[in-house]
Image (spheres, rainbow, N blue to C red):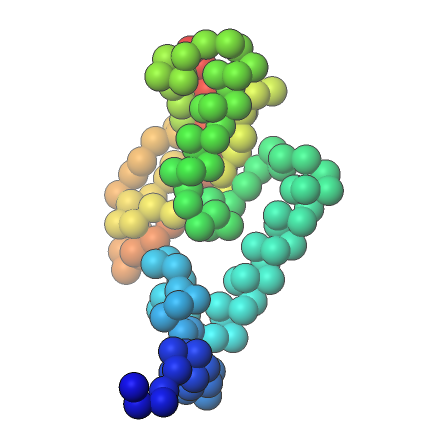
Length: 146
């Protein structure tokens, strides 16, 4: 034994990262790893506020998928909740995506297209404008049915 502890190494790594404006590896999520520590903390605060509001006021009708560490887990939970309400098999529940909201749908905002654009009048994908890599999408609606 050399007299070193895992905790000391972890604290040193975190201190080094914070000094260099880097998110420590133990704190990283794949979609946030390129952010500096200040942006990362700001994003974490947004998430905390989002989930606090959800806990206080119930599930929002429109959400940003970026708030979730695990989007697939959120969509799976929606299917499980629907199956429980309708007393049907989870495997029989399907997700439907579109642009028309109904009373059972959840809207996803701040989604972007890469190398394409959206025509809001025709509700179709179109070619992107010159030198435009990303374009905003309208709110995408997700509902469940069996």
